Length: 385
Ligand code: NAD
Ligand code: MG
Image 1: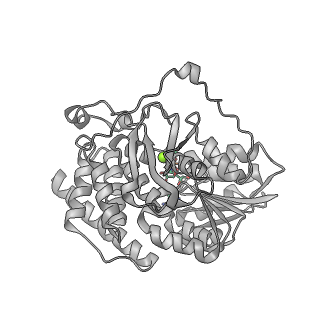
Image 2 (image 1 turned 90 degrees about the vertical axis):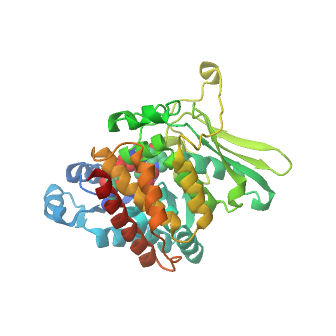
Image 3 (image 1 turned 120 degrees about the vertical axis):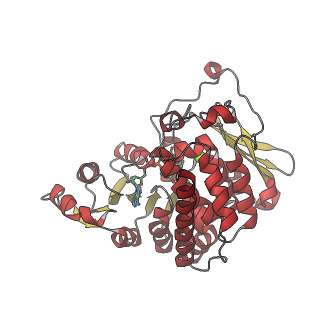
């Protein structure tokens, strides 16, 4: 039996992971489940799976969680330090699916513990990629990408040498505003931005897909996971989300990974790796889909793509600053404080105003992240004054 922990168990990726685990009760036993504030959801999951421990991120909710778990035999814990120590407990397999840089410390702790870490939490890798890759190689942890594109690339690489790779193509759906003009985008509401045409996901990544910052973050993620050089990683808009990414080798052979747009497919790959398990996902029906379309990304309408590539090129703390400013701006957009086009504008403004030395430690990353959040708050105040 494989022991598994899920960080961010109540979210979209967390629920998909639990769905797979529940279908194979003899294969997996649950160690830790975590959530930020959904006490009832977390307690129900922990009881249903017989988890050893449930951790709620918000320390003030400890009492509520303890009460909800009374008599169940599941241990209750709360607060950021409890998240980190649950990650240190070292399950065989840990799903890192907290959203945002909030997942950084638990994800690093899981990597240091040395098991297998299935990484959905791309913001942690964007912010602290070099340190995370170092932590994984120091402990011997296995880092498996869950983001569908990176999971596809991992599958297409299948152990090949990176020096044989000519090009990695990250596919992008283009999001809900793929065909919208800048003027049309200016008027888009949070409800319109989170209505993704192909994928059902959490609110933050859905907005990132609409601005295409998601693909920008994924470019940075890919550069850390598959260090072939930034100039060898390109983005291709593919509205049907059937080809999840491609690897072209120097002999000009190109491998692609295809599948229905269902996150349970890449999650199942990471869960069972190096074996395979069955999933309840739809088989790919290319006759029904009929055609696959491709187009070049439009950097004018989607400036986030340019900002992210520049940040990747700059390296050091710049991706962490980009990510933090984006998190603040997306939250402000979702709460109705700013308009859709303001998101990339705020990120650009913060990147122009603030830089930090290359981080040597996670604390350095978190300091740059915190400073960038403060700067983003100030830019926003001027904007909405
Ligand atoms: P979500 O919003 O649905 O869920 C986020 C989870 O993180 C929840 O369990 C929440 O309780 C927890 N969380 C949020 N803030 C927290 C905090 N401060 N401390 C502790 N826990 C906190 O998000 P999601 O769509 O499941 O995405 C999770 C991660 O996976 C993101 O990094 C996202 O980019 C990535 N991802 C998601 C998808 C997808 O299909 N949803 C696909 C690829 C990658
Ligand atoms: Mg993705």
